[in-house]
Length: 251
Image 1 (cartoon, rainbow, N blue to C red):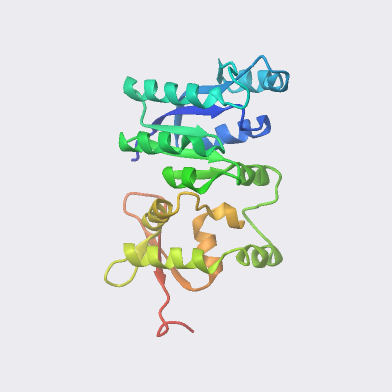
Image 2 (cartoon, rainbow, N blue to C red):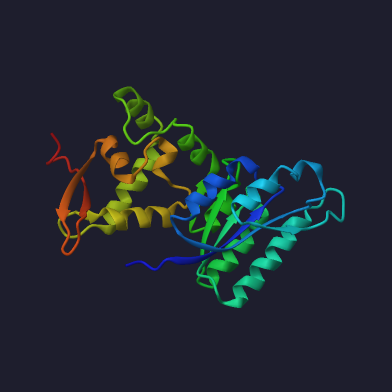
């Protein structure tokens, strides 16, 4: 059984809208236990006053950081210093860095060098270097779309067609090569291994970005892969295997 990760959640309050916090904390719970939850900002500023109830409801500790100089973000420095203090404390397995700011790219890299799992969370405007520095990156807009019911587990044929049209040739190539890299001699690959490899290659990959709640319906909708369910010993769940469909097997 996979270990439940002990996570430190550090939030850039100057960079993340309050409306995402509840959804974000629910998402983080899928990856581990957020034992440290801190948010950084200058709480003397009026525009941050709306955070109070949200922070109380989610047991997030606000860290006061005054803006010493106009145009400079002191919040970043405070968050980075705290992250290193937490790292050297040796009580975490990973970090959730919540920001859309590329200034945290080096921090994410440094944490991973110390064998910490790094989950980045931010808006779709997040620069690519920060995304690439994380083990996994989650877009906040996708979480909001799920909440609003724009993405559903069961889609109509029209919705499915629209979702498939979002899948680019580059993404299909990513899936194909990852299946090939994980495959046995018969070409079959365990879907869990495929998903893990895809995320290593492209941390911001998420089937929800394309309108699919899980990886299996995403791959099935593409229509060029074989999917097989197999009984798993000592488990009530079936294992999913996938294979690239060769021309000789294609119908």
